[in-house]
Length: 410
Image 1 (cartoon, rainbow, N blue to C red):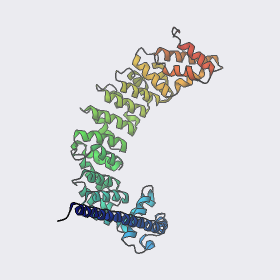
Image 2: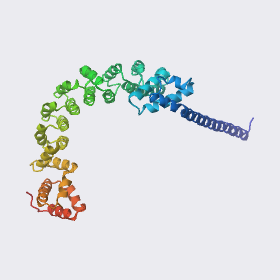
Image 3: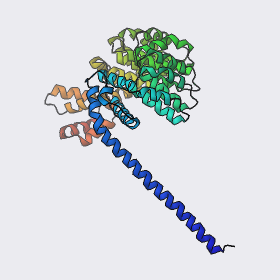
Image 4: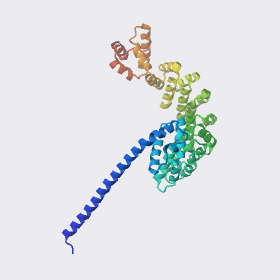
């Protein structure tokens, strides 16, 4: 029988052996990793100049310039190509795709899409997105039915990078299943694919569920498809208020002045989100016939509508700013406050404050008249700060006098 002390010694020896093994394993693993990194850095210095020469137009094919590549050399070449793919465009970007196909890198990653480990499939989809080879489209479409959500989304993003119309339809179909997909994220991908994707959305819009339709309407505005306006104008009268609001916003993004009459009608919509988006869109179109209606909307009871109308007027140049100045005399308190906030943001208030020090008496009187309107609107925070901190003493004196209680206001 072993004594207790002998058993303790054996346990300590065992623990010491395990710890020694772990220490050696960590040291050897780190040494091998550092050796591999040094080898990769050396190989990169050798391969990168030749790869960049090809990318910049030298030679028809990259293979002959690199010669035979082993597995490790291929991985380094892939890293170089994908690093440059992140910021290159045009012909140079197309040559990177051609090189990835020629060296078999596209086929390697397509094969990896069937890997049993999900993170390997996700990695392959991400790298195929950078390679932008249309040859990967069929396998990426299959991967969109993967059981792992992250893999599905990376496959969708990869399809969005491919310059092929075959990748558009599965993305549109994905929006029809909101339980498995984020409609907003798919819409972002489709918006980046240009007018072809938008045209496909127009054709399939009626098949989409309500939640996906809202995202699709946003996509149509961002893509600025020539086929979108007809649908968007019809959607201004859709029963769903969110769709009406997003349709108004998208029409503003497309920016055709001919949309103005329809958007003016939406300023009278019963739902405030629609009125707010219509006001924002009219500001982008900047048509003079919208100035007076937007000035009226400054009296809207909803804050967001008032602010969008004020910002819309601000973006319409001198006529819009004149309407905001006119709103300072409005009987409606909300309209006055919206006008003051926007004029402050546009720098108009500071401009008039500076005129208080003008040598021209007419300019000074004009500035005083304007500032008294601001005081009457009961939004004097900015003026009080200027009265305390303005660089010119004459301006501070004038403001302090106007801001005194009992000052006569015209």
